[in-house]
Length: 174
Image 1 (cartoon, rainbow, N blue to C red):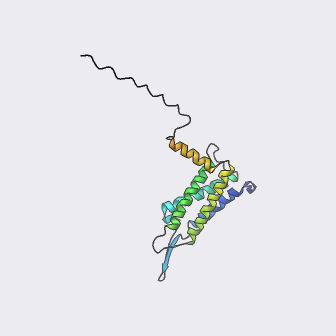
Image 2: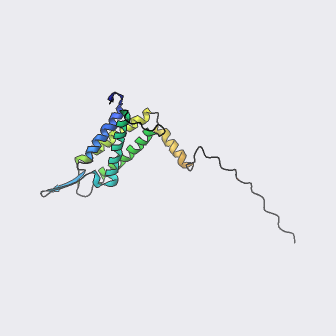
């Protein structure tokens, strides 16, 4: 395995994914008092815990396998764009969990580590996206034009021209 091929953005995605892997098992929310302590980890929250955990671990593993030349990601897919979108979604979900603490529960070390790891992976995904020639402004324009045009495909044939309206027939003579 040759790690000399790893770029900075690869290290950010792999390292952040590894930290998120561990952070998922640590306490995210906890409550203590009167001689007891109860905690919850990432897997106690499906959409704001388990889904981001799957996203970030997958990005880290796929990046490692691709950068180490063990596995090749498909060149027909915009992998940097997909990773950036997935990382942004995962980070948003972790931020929601971070600020949506249940009454009386304190944030645990796992949630803090998860938030930092999510930001690191997203930064690495953004760096890879821009290195591949991606531009967020252009991506936004492309998405906006596709949604405003009804998501028409460029390969679709043009619609037929509108039929000319015929004047109504004259009224019958009496």
